[in-house]
Every structure is written in C-alpha cells, then in structure tokens.
Image 1: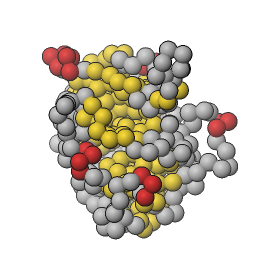
Image 2: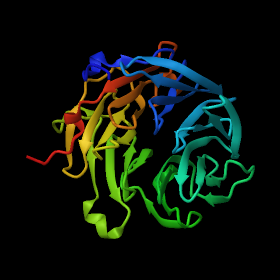
Image 3: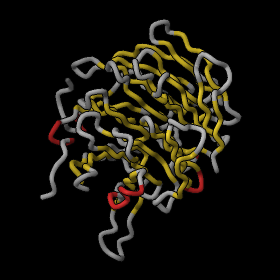
Image 4: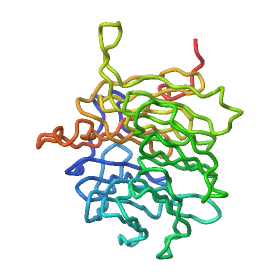
Length: 339
C-alpha cells in the first residue's frame, strides 16, 4: 500500500482531469477510482498496491460532468452532468449509454439499493427522479421545494438538500412521499451531505465552515450537534475568523468515523460519537473539492481543485487540478474515547 501517511508524501494520480474535479468515488469491489470533471469527462483509474495509478477508461458528457456513483456490484458507473442527462458506463464493455434525463443539470446521482437496483437522480430542475436504467422513463418523479444542491442515500434513507436550506428526507420503502421536511440546522447554504453507514442519520456541511451531525428519528435528537471547522483565526474578539466552505464529508467504511475537507485546502478525520477531532493534516495550498475512501478505508483520495468558492474570477489558467492518494494510518481513523 502507499508507503507514507504524511500529506507531503501522498501519491499523485497520473493523467488527472484538465479542469475542476467535481466528484470522486471508489468502486465498492475494487481499487478503481472514478472522477467526474468540468472538462466534460469521467475518468476511471486503477490504483495499484504500491499507490501508483493507471488510467483505465474515460467517457464524455457534452457539458461538465458534475457527479458519479458506482453500482453496488462495481460493474457499472453512472454520472450526471450539465448536459441534463445521466450516463451509464459498463466496465466490461467500455460503452456508455444515456439512462436519465432532466430539464436542468443533474447535480447528484445515487444508486438506491432496494429489492432491485434503482438509480436516483437529483437536479437543479427541483426534482428527484427514480429510474430503472433499462427503461427510458422514470419510475417516479418527486418535486423538491428548490434546486437540488446535495443528495446521498444509504438504504432505506435518502436525504436531499436544496437551495434556501431545505432538507427533504425519504424512507425509500415509500420513496415518493417525504418522511420528513425541515430546514437545515446550519444557517448558511448547504454544500455537502453524507448519510451515516448505518442509515440512521447524516452529516451536513455548509459554506460557512460548519458541520452538523443529524439523526433522522426524533427520539435520537439529543445526539444531534454541530461544530466549526475549516476556519482560520478568530481566536480573539478582534481577530475575525476567515471562514471556508466544507466541501465534502465521507464516512470510513470500517470504523464509522468521518472526514471533512474544505476550501481552505485541508482535511481532517473526526469521531462523531466522542465528538472530537482525531487528526488534522497539513494544508495542500488550494481548495479540496471532493474526497472519498476506498472500500476498506486504507486509501483516502482527495482532489486539489478550484471549487468556485470565489466565483468565476477565482478560476485562472494557473489553477491546478490534482488527485492525491493518502495512505490511511489506522490510528488516525479509529474511534477514540474522550480523555
């Protein structure tokens, strides 16, 4: 496996995307890393045991690719884009086909693992659609209160976060009717959402350097909390804090701890149960736009890429786009009792 756990010695993936990296996902069955990019392409890399990478496949959207998700058996990758469609890429054939359509860009795609694999697509057209990918029309369309900004699912839970801080929670046993609708516990725009591995709640991150841990059931409300992160300064009243967006939250597949990464160019590991930070890593010099753990939690991939936190004026020809692989030291992600 990759030999160092120091951020300065993390391994760089060869042949990275040529524009902003919008989402990365590891296959659940192999060390294949998918990356969707603003250069319209979705790339798949094979990560070798020594941490080196090999570009395995690439396919195109006709506009920026905004999201991607692997099927549970790892044989297919789905992606959504600003071209308003979702594409399904078959690993065995190397072919991609259109499987979904919206009236505006598709911001999120997730496989919904029920009795049969169903694809959920969320869009800026204010809908979530459920698809049997063998059929040209959706099984069901659900209207949202606003444009979808983030979405995640761990069966039977699906959480959709929209503009104006709306959160809509679905029990996928009854997917067309909201189980609960609420306003985000965070006071600023939602940037990312990630369901607990057990499907009992979710972590939500905002543009204002803050994360909330939320349980779905009212009986667990006492376990909800929020905390500040991805900030600089603010140690005194006169020292005003510089606040950065929380761009990504990921759960460790073995230990159930989680990572955050942000526009400040840093990532950290946390334990929600003991409510403490486990490990902070050195800043990488540019925003981290997206992150993910591999299937056994031994590799943490992070994309060093412009995240549009300063608008179009922040995007320059010098903006770097890199995918880095961090070898996870188990002591950094194991749950820890508060001292």
